[in-house]
Length: 589
Image (tube, one colour):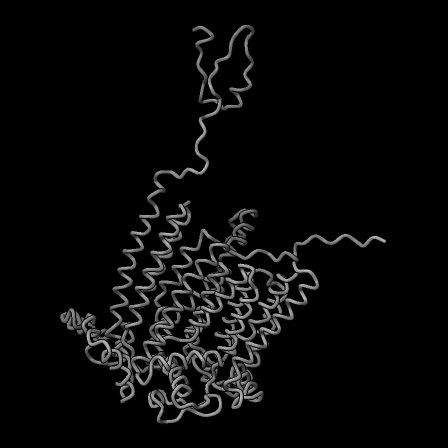
């Protein structure tokens, strides 16, 4: 073969082909030694349809979830007290929407309830509360499994590079299905149970101010109030003035109707839940965009959040909404509006008051970029705005509450004298009830001491949005776990804040506690066990601790050192900058 007709061996490395010596008088072939360039940001053809396949999977899962939520209708309608007040609440929504009972599967498929009679503990025709509570709990377990699987689907698609159109399409699809699920729970039947009493209590205080012109901080609701015979409130309002204002506005919309009262508060919960989904997606876009779809699905489609936030509407869903707005404004370098939002949160529920120092610490850090004169002017403006918000919030009720009333409210919120569904309540029913520590007020003091130490630790470390969200999550979680009064809807806000921080260990703990709240839901409807906190709080925390121990041990013994560090730091907020900041040079003289 002539030397000019030689071919280049493409199986050999480029470097070896490039460094071969040339013979004298021989011309080298003029073939390219590098492969043709490919577009830098091209997406393989197989991934272009990944977003559409994920959308189809989410639609199918959404259909199953919607079917399970509709299956709760006849069970929720049967969960009510047997007195006249319970019957009035039970007939409220069907009286406003006569077509509502036609959605009950017991009416659409009559043979199915007859078939369930062969299983004694699922026989819903016997009319007992325990059977309906058990079957509704099982349906919530299935719905929770579907929500977890949907989050898993979202996590798999996030591993691939999707276009901006696919991300936007998936977000709007998730939001649209969330609206459908929320509307389903908006129209869900409701009975007079321990789960729905809060929603009716809000209406009692709002109706008291709107139509009887009485101060809820000075007098107990009168017996002739619209909702007072249903719930029997015997104390002044424990809520902050901003929440009382919201209750008054909703009472003015509802007028003298039990059904309208339920719908207005549920509508507020639905609106807050939809806004929370959008805020969570927006916050995660900057924090961890590759996990925003899976993380948003964990919150948006969670049946327990839909139940506690919309169907049974508790104020935690609204507090979370304003809290996420505060995080978003701080993330967008608007600390003034963010501070007003977190101040409003504290004025709705005084238990959230210790969160203010964490955001104050964040404001201090963000104000360092200002010059000294501008900084003093800005802090003066912030102080003035805070005073204006406080005065406007307390002014309508100050003649009845005063400084002594504010102190009494703080004492009532932080030094609780009763124990309900908590670890303290479980210990009080043990033979060691005479011990000093398990007294409710002493227990509250110890819990507040632990929360205070954790708050000081947070003030030392929290200098980023992710760390502030994480420490707020743990402060609220410590409240829920340690204080003498515990309700499962206290976990809604810590769960969403853990998702904002993208801290895996905190998310796992909250998922375990939410799973245990399914048991708490069943026990609360049946009042079977006063020591339920041992299973609904203690057992999840114990499992979480053992999981951390074994996972850490496995990583240390089976994974190389470099991968251990990467695995431990993955999903964790970054280390505060001041801990890794190089030392300043010494002063020159």
